[in-house]
Amino acid sequence: MSCAAGVPLDRLVAYWLGDTTSVALDVELEEHQWACDDCTRRLAWLASLGDATRALVRRRGGLALPLTGALVDRLAADGVRLRHYRPARNQDVACAVALDDDLVASWLDADPADDERIDVELRGPDGALWQRYEDIPVDRAVGKVVLAEAGDRIRLLPTITIDVVVTAVGPRGARLVSRHAYHHTAAG
View 1: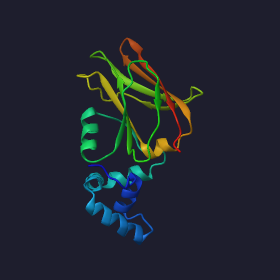
View 2: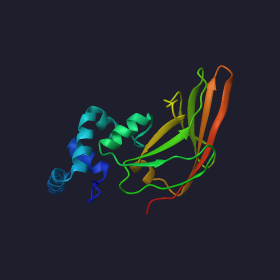
View 3: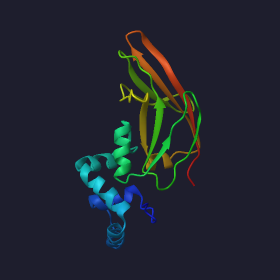
View 4: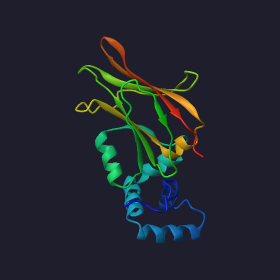
């Protein structure tokens, strides 16, 4: 079952952390949460994160991190709403984010040798490095890495193209694994 009210993750977080300013909104959310299995699971997931939740929410720029496929599956089972992009090697991606997407997960090809690690770079339209992830977890059974971004963070982006570069790095140097142009359409 999915939540018909579309309660945003940031509202659930604010409620759980006691950072809301409206008693009426708190009461409304409590009544909804007790009647909605989806929101109950999502709130339980937030509660299990403890103090880490407060640190992530207060960090400017939101949540962005590499994940394992197993963790993505666990988050989905706990009620976190995920949008998935699974481009083929070197395929460009037309993408957007919905108002109820908590996280956006990109599943990218990775085929490192035993002595190589996988690094991923995000670059802006001018080629400037925005973010670099080094030695991220690889699901070697399926040859994938997963990058996740908070839906709230992506909703702030204008219509833009972001280059995602996957590189294998080892004793013989670096080699390009794949490159993707994510053509993001702004929300709204």
